[in-house]
Image 1 (tube, one colour):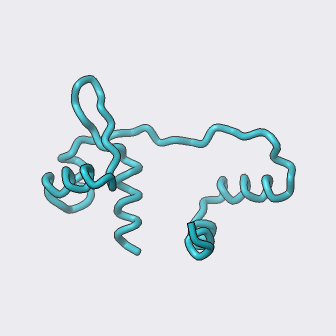
Image 2: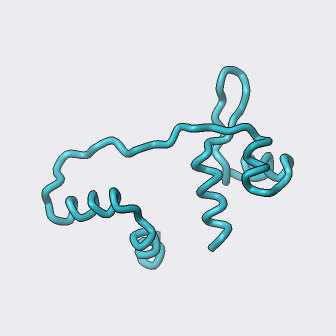
Length: 92
């Protein structure tokens, strides 16, 4: 990651992340804590609706690795956070 990308992520960080970074830099945070992970998933159709694209586009984005596929009980779903991340990257 370039220094510019690191600074952009730092400026966009939420207050909880900034507090964690401050604690690490101050040396007061010595034990790692689990990162909050959003495990919500949505269907390919819902991903297409949220992104304003077609389902085939969702399949192409997933195949390209831009959307994370999660197999659940024999069906594939898209991780919601990967949709948010993909839209955020596309807006930059």
